[in-house]
Amino acid sequence: MTVTEENVETLDVFGSRARAWIEANLPSWDDDEVDSHTLQNLLFDNGFAGIAFPREYGGAGLTLAHQKVFYDTAAELRRQVPSTYMVSIGMMAPTILDSASHEAKLRFLPKALRGDETWMQLLSEPRGGSDMAGSTTRLTRDGDIYVLNGAKMWSSGAYESTYGLCLCRSDWNAPKHRGLSMIAVPLQGTPGLELHRTRAANGNLGEFCEESFVDVQLPVDNLIGEESKGWSVAQTLLFHERNAVANIGYGYLGRTAARSGSAQRSNFGVLAVPEMVERARARGGSPEARQAIADAFIEETVLGITSGRIMAGMRVGTHKGQWGSMLKLQGSVAAHERARTALVVSGADGVIWDGDEVRIDNPGTTWLGCRGGTLAGGSNEMQRNIVSERLLGLPREPSFDRDLPFNEVIRNQGKL
Ligand SMILES: Cc1cc2nc3c(=O)[nH]c(=O)nc-3n(C[C@H](O)[C@H](O)[C@H](O)COP(=O)(O)OP(=O)(O)OC[C@H]3O[C@@H](n4cnc5c(N)ncnc54)[C@H](O)[C@@H]3O)c2cc1C
Image (cartoon, rainbow, N blue to C red; front, side, top):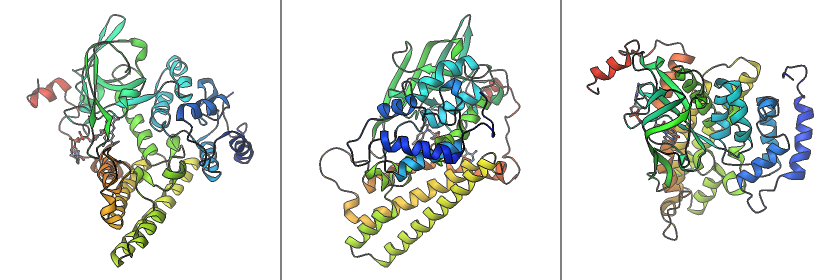
C-alpha cells in the first residue's frame, strides 16, 4: 500500500501504540546494557525499525515525524534504543532507498534495517577528502563483473561493517563529476582488499581505517544507481550524513538521549551543561567558568530551537534542501567550544585518569576528538560554501576543471 496523508496512521494513534510497546518491551536505562544488534532485531521484528521506510523494503511505511515520536518517547520513558546504527540506518539505508534499483533495495534494505548487515561509506582518498569528485579509485567493467583498484582512507567503522559504499571513477574521459560510480564493496574477507585500522588523535585505536583495492572483483548488481551517475548518489549520501550528524531526518535515532551515562553528554560526547555546572561548583566556580557555561547553555538552547524549527519545516515542506549543513556547522562549532569549556571547568581532572587505557570520554581526549566533528561529513569550510551557495543563493565557488575531461585535469596536475 502506498503511504499517503489519508491512509497513514496519525501521530497520536502511533504515539500511543509506540508508548505501550516501548513500556512493555524496551529495557530501562537503569537495566544492564543490551547490545545494539539485539535491540535492533527487537525493533525490526515488531515493526518499529526503519519507521519511515516503505514496508516492501522492511520498514514500517510511516514518516520521519513518526520516527521522531518513537525515539522521543523512548527517551522520555528512559528506555534503551540501539546506539550504533546512525551511519548504517541513518545515512546509508536512506541513500540506498533514494538511489538503488528496486532489486537492490529488496536485497539490501531489510537486512540493513534489522541490523544484520551494516553499511559505511568509502569516499575520502589519500589525495583529499573535500575534493570528493576528484576520486581516482578506478572501476572497470570486465564482462559480467566490475574490477576495483585504488585506495580509500578515514573510513569509519570499515573493519566491522558488512558493506562500504564506494565512490570510484568509471569514465576517465568525462568531466570529473560525470565519470563517477557508486558501488557496494563487501568488506569482510574480500580477495584483493586490504584493510588497516589507524589511531586517531584522541587515542582511539581502530575506528578509522585505510583500505587498498587490488583487482577486487564485484558483481555488477552491486552498483548503486547507474554507471557514471554516482555523483548524484554521493550528493544524496552527504545530504543524509549532514542531516544525521545534525540529528534530523532519518538520522534522528535518539542519539542525544541514549542511556544514563551518555544521556548526560551532548553531541560528540562532550559534557552537558548540568555536568559542567557540577564540576565548576566543585572547583569554586570562577567568573570565567560561569560565563563560559552560560554561553554553552545559550548555544545549546539556540541549537535545539533551530533544529526543531528546521525539522518542522522539513515536515511541512518549507525547509527543503541543505539545512542539515547549517545545523552541522553550528553544532560542530558549538561542540568544540563546549569541549573547551568542559576542559576549563574540569581543571587537571580533565586530562588525567586512572589506568593505562586511553579514556576517550575524558574532557581532554573529548576536546581532541571533537575536532573530528568539524571535518567529518565535509569540513566546516565546505559547509560554509554549501550554506552560501545553496541556502543563500550566492555565486558558486569558481572551478577551473568542472567541464574538462578528468584525464586532462589530472594530466594538468602532473598526476598522469
Ligand atoms: C570523525 C571523522 C570521521 C570520518 N569518517 C569518514 C568515513 O567514514 N568515510 C570517509 O570517506 N571519510 C571519512 N572522514 C573523512 C572526512 O570526510 C574528510 O576528513 C573531510 O572530507 C576533509 O577532507 P581531508 O581531511 O582530506 O581534507 P582536505 O580536503 O585535504 O582539506 C584540507 C583543508 O582545506 C580546506 N578546503 C579544502 N577545499 C576547500 C574549498 N574548496 N574551500 C575552502 N576550504 C577548502 C578544508 O576545509 C580543510 O580545512 C571522516 C573524518 C573524520 C574527522
